[in-house]
Amino acid sequence: MSAFLTLHHQIEFGNQYPKNRTRTTSPMSFTPHSEHPGIFTMKFRISHTKATQGRSINLILSERGISALRLVGITDEVIKRNSTPVKGKMVHTEDGRGISFLTDGKGRSVLYSVLRKDLNEVLLTVAEKNPNVKFFYKHKLLSCCFKTGKFKVQRHDGKIIEESTDLLIGCDGAYSAVRRQMVQMLRFDYHQSYFEHGYIELCFPSTESGQFAIEADYFHFWSRKQVMLTALPNPNCTFTITLFMPFELFEQINTPEKLLQLFSENFPDAIPLIGKEKLVTDFFNASPNALVSIKVSSPPFVLSFISTFQNLRLTNFLSTLRFSQCSSYHVEDKALILGDAAHAMLPFGGQGVNAGLEDCEILSELLNVYKCDFRKVLSEFTKCRQKDAEIICDFAQSTYHVVSVIIMSGL
Ligand SMILES: Cc1cc2nc3c(=O)[nH]c(=O)nc-3n(C[C@H](O)[C@H](O)[C@H](O)COP(=O)(O)OP(=O)(O)OC[C@H]3O[C@@H](n4cnc5c(N)ncnc54)[C@H](O)[C@@H]3O)c2cc1C
Image 1: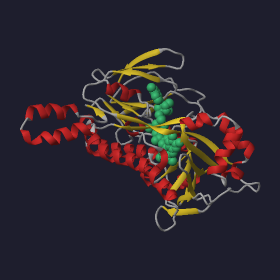
Image 2: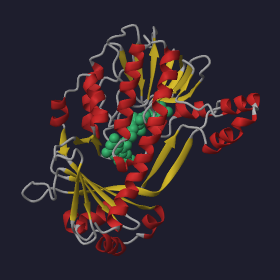
Image 3: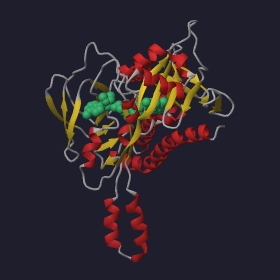
Image 4: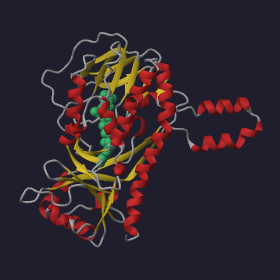
């Protein structure tokens, strides 16, 4: 689901659908509501360019996300046709060994490496078939008011328009404008932390005979003391390589010699796979992107403060405190955040898109269960989703450390 989305029981909004739009690379999509034809959905997004800056080219789809895709009629065959199957992780040790870990224990491929733009294409094709969905490209949400349901959007021509909605769903990524508005409200906490590493993307081209340069059916990791390289296969037999390292190190690596030394010391086996010349060109053409983690939750000190004083019968005082820790993914029956807007996570577990798609599946179920009573749906969504999302965020963080520990322990 990209950008933000408004749900209306009935509204007219003028048709600004671009005639010759190109597809964007943002991956998620909302489950269309064919069962609830009274609901009118509009999707707004900033761009409709071919490539999204600061985003990985490909990503891993797992059952968590695939299950949501099935719900909107995207079959396993379509996923397989548009992806490269992956059966597990392969960790590359300093002495050049590759240690494999099968995801389902039996060696079956249960993960799929998919190009962002292909996934997006498939999702848009499905969404376009739903007559209740209208798309507005190059529309940037500037502000919204949860009391009145009014929101301001800047169009591609600079014109600012104001509209109103019954429910605003922010799927506008880690730097969400909808969440920004929520945070300005009383009693809304969230935690944002930057990983000390940035990342750039490089590539293992296919071999001269057009084959994959290394085993295609693994998510590859080279984890070293300060730096990490990962590789995911693409349908054209190339690998997208992601180099993670501290921002200061990116700054220090300012000559081809320093870069080749870094690779010789840490990833000697990757140099011939990329090619020296290509490595230097691609590295110096890229600029590192930041990795941010978002949790919408109560700060731990408030919780421990409450539990410490729980027995002191300061009921009124405590209820005020409890109130003040009442963070959530929603505002009454007016607004909701999904995907990275609610729970951006580090990419090492390959779960960000998958968790966002799972959000859509859960939301869709709740809309059915509570017959589109937005107030019940939204509060139930926060209740059942917040803890899970936090755990997935922690899992993503710990995956980085687990892979490092495997390397350090010399397995
Ligand atoms: C290097 C890397 C590798 C990754 N690998 C994986 C992986 O293997 N598997 C996986 O599941 N996840 C992976 N992820 C995570 C994944 O990319 C994110 O979780 C996912 O893109 C989140 O989708 P989203 O739609 O919530 O947000 P985004 O993809 O960030 O989309 C947000 C959209 O909102 C639009 N927008 C922003 N602000 C506004 C505004 N004010 N008005 C209108 N529109 C707006 C943006 O233009 C964009 O189109 C990876 C991430 C990184 C950085």
